[in-house]
Length: 610
Ligand code: AGP
Image (cartoon, rainbow, N blue to C red; front, side, top):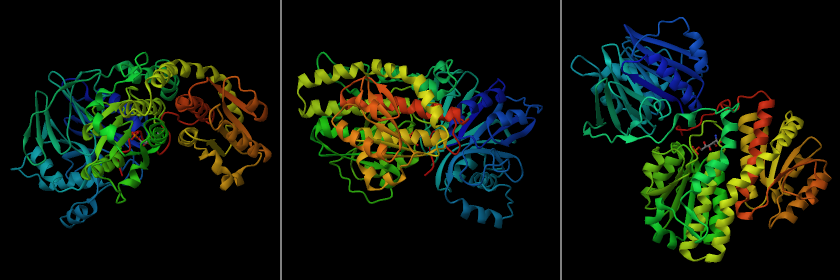
């Protein structure tokens, strides 16, 4: 939540910071602001998007080679010019940008008000910069003042601080919110992720929790918050600039939907050996014995990643015959869950930064569980917190609505289920050979799903004004239905619900009338006949049915209003195919409704607040 970018060097700080903020806008877009060192400390900020800030600052003097910028997802205080970052100290000498939440800000604020501090915004962030101002004296330099102040705050933060009195310094620190330092020659970059940095340098340092850094043009000092000098580890980025561009597509979301044959293939590369009937997962192989003997697996995740977890439950129980529970990380962490050292916990997260998932991991770790991560963003917090893990390798996902990350997560879970089955001997080699041969074909089958795109756009035209939608499926078609409903809600703002098709008769069927579109996952699999009965129940009540069917299916076609075909595949891989038309359906509906597909209202790509 909130994007941060900073620069100190010899280039135009404004240009670097603004470009970086555009890249980080997926993290929040309620307001944007920049602080520049140009003579004094110049602050330019505005409610709205980064482009609104650019328009606002068009005639301003934007020279300077030290600066920082922020794009906000509002927590404390409504989105407004006043609440936009950067915030300043009372004397105007210090400025801060912040991602996270200072939980004890109210107590600190009260104490500061008693000492005469006057606040201009409703934010927790402004309290922190006033606290730094209060601590900083002639004998306490900027780095030390920030360090001492951070020792007094409770909560999460990634911050950058600038001072008029120390014009050649940036101070950065993190706890619970990500921060990457780019190392150049005579210049340093700092950002919430590597995307603003990649075109300038490949050398990066991932700041660790509770570390604070002093950045000068030719010097970097990293300390722990309790004042111990650290030796930062410089690593090379594998990210490429073209991965961050739309590549001719109108929206990132569409590009990412169309990337799925490639991203699923990348996810399987080097991990499946169809001829031998073997799965290799290097990231978790050291825990093979633990996996073999696991009696229970708990999957924790949020949102779309939680839906992938539900698919994982079907797959792991089916193939590896181990009991799986799937939990919302946000609920799990606030219960008193029964977790022991015998358990394996799988945390799923695209960003690797979701605060609730991180807290749930920490809780499970405290109780002795072995934690595996399934993440997309390499080097993010979750892979560093877990004992072992498997990356999805989907590449950067910029659209706020998750698409290729979901299919990547489902692919990894499929591989894990088959890997466990192989270890436990719950599947014989001949069956594994067949399954892996079919799995290997999935990228090509995803490609075939795109043949229906034009038809899907026409269906979207018919239903774009519907106020409600139902999505129904059985078995692993149920999480696909949930994911279809979530996609539609988040980008088109249409109310949608996903249900197990059989549950419909226990309540939701009351919603069916001639105006209710119902999307069924009705492919030819073990629940095909049952789903057909559910379709009949909806049609009997005049509901409008759009069915995702297996290519060539005539039976369903004759009873519903619209069909969207997907190629035939093994039932186990259905979610990897049936999800694709649902992503396209919500995409086209959102575009037709004039919605901002890549940056839907109120959302942010990585939810680093609780
Ligand atoms: C997906 O479209 C959502 N925007 C959201 O539900 C997301 O999946 C959720 O916030 C979890 O994020 P993570 O995978 O980065 O942990």
